Image (tube, rainbow, N blue to C red; front, side, top):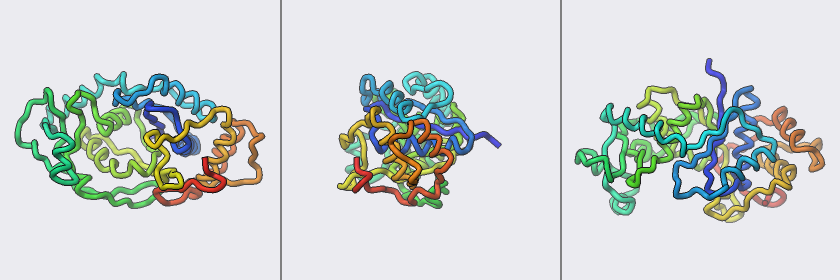
Length: 295
């Protein structure tokens, strides 16, 4: 049986906000309780969204909150040859084709891409590249939410794996990286549920076993908008690491009179590793920040 390997893979488009801190914490606790590895990968494949210095800030935030990763950090910008090699493998399988459709053109025809360019034999150079998706599954078993159903039209859409500008797509890069790092378990926000079946289809193309998924609720503010960099969520402050952890504990079901802001960060994290259980986490896709846990 393969040992547990988990990972936290933030995008360096800005520092960690409270929602991403909660995700990192659950991912960390899940790995430590399984006596497995916990890896950190910087998902900077979309170089147009990188914020200078953000990756280093994120790493400092994780360490300040008691989460130390195992093994070396992987940066997607250093993995371009691996992505190109994987793409060439799919080209040899005749599993991909070039697509000239813009996002606007796709939206004008409907909600999902319908394979407009599949039979046109367009050149790869100067066009995006899509995978021929012959998948038929629209559900999977989530470690936290149980059976999850996804829109079949989305699951079977020919997904783009390289953009017209030459940048590799997130769905493609993340699968190649998880295979490379031998990741077995992915703990992430429920806002990424819909990508699961598309990613699983890529695993099958490469004849590799799919990872196990644990989707936790997305942290939302009072207007039910998820905390995100796009919504200008504030960065977590390392100076208040103990307070931040206690707020995160409350959201994931860890409440105890034993805990206080006077405890060290390492003591708080060690306590959480011993006492937290996935059963304490709400089985829903969103958690609303309100009252005492608002940030």
